[in-house]
Length: 211
Image (tube, rainbow, N blue to C red):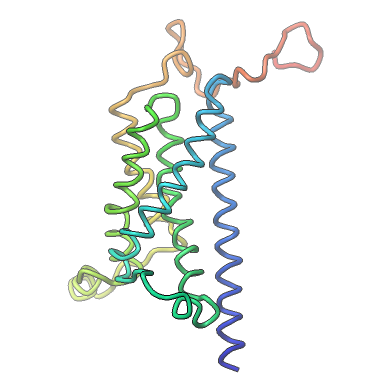
């Protein structure tokens, strides 16, 4: 019965990880739809490489900071309980890698490739795990202090603050520093909030097109 429960828990977590991983495809398509055609390949490659860099940073540094766990063990130890520990790492990695994906969408067409990858490594390896460890693992004594001071610890729902809000907080100073996308949202002295991508061109003479 214990083996069945362990296998069921691992399968459930793996399915959740697969669904969160699919969210990264949504990030990629969203960013591709907001950049100009000549920058779409660059945007897609950044999303893919960001995930690769996030995996390395989180595996070797970030996960240990957040949960005090590292994977320098033999294969038989890692395979215990149907590999639950590794599946749990993969599940949490998909959330950690969402941070640079959110930031990438905010600074699309305005950041260089290598500096953004360096920022991804620092964010996922050092900064994000501190918040994750506090909110989800009660590390560093912050939750105990909140419970003692305010009679309740901090509760996060489905990563709404730890992942999504944190990604927005990181992207905000970057957006303010880099400024608007010239020629995309500001052109000829006018501001267009949602201009169509240059991958699609409409003609006024074509029937059924945008006016």
